[in-house]
Image 1: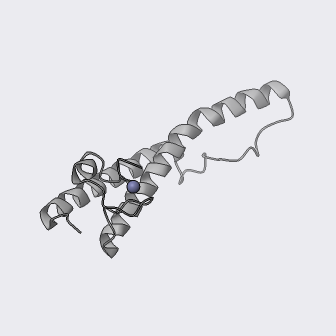
Image 2: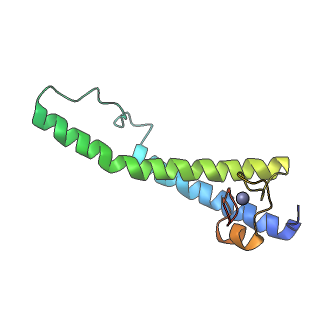
Length: 114
Ligand SMILES: [Zn+2]
């Protein structure tokens, strides 16, 4: 790996910060502990207008949550790669990702070409 330990430490710090922010944002959206949050359609009634409203509310929040979950997954994955020494390798072509790209986006999984 061509990333020096100082840069790697900075990237790890950035990833950990981003992970904490994503988790706090997800907790705010998902509220997993208070029991109000559901991702199912269980409570949707038979009335067609009710269905429409609930589906719209459901789909309104979903993209944000999915984006956060996806990003969190990338950050977690990048941290795991740091642990096993494969950090900075493009998932697609297995070439090293440019350090400038990693500094701009520490959780980048692919190189610029990919
Ligand atoms: Zn690549």
